[in-house]
Image 1 (cartoon, rainbow, N blue to C red):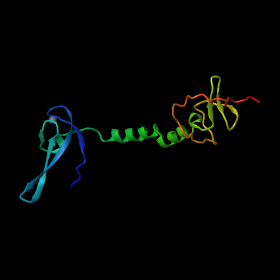
Image 2 (cartoon, rainbow, N blue to C red):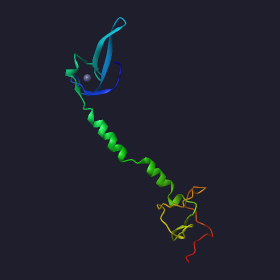
Image 3 (cartoon, protein in one colour):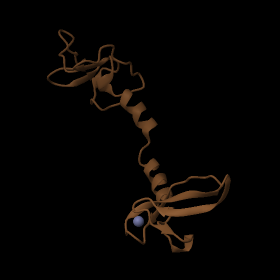
Length: 135
Ligand SMILES: [Zn+2]
């Protein structure tokens, strides 16, 4: 009997979106029933037939699609392997360079040979004397 799920209703007395409050009624120590109340105005409903429930379907559907749009694990992994966070990533005024594959890269590229850069500070420091040679 005790399953205090919040139930969303639209109150017929105050017209607001509210929660249905189920208050147990006791006769001495014995529970004899429940009072159904609006959480907003405290209106007491004689029975459930009087109550305008908000539909229970909408929240579930919303949850599912919400999850699909946010593949968080995947995105986090991709972000960590970006060239701009890689130890071999070199920026100079002319290009962004991969020190492993000796080719131009984009900051947003990802790479199988990714190695996390030890100090990922400002990230825009110029490589003194380490300019890549094209050959
Ligand atoms: Zn109400």
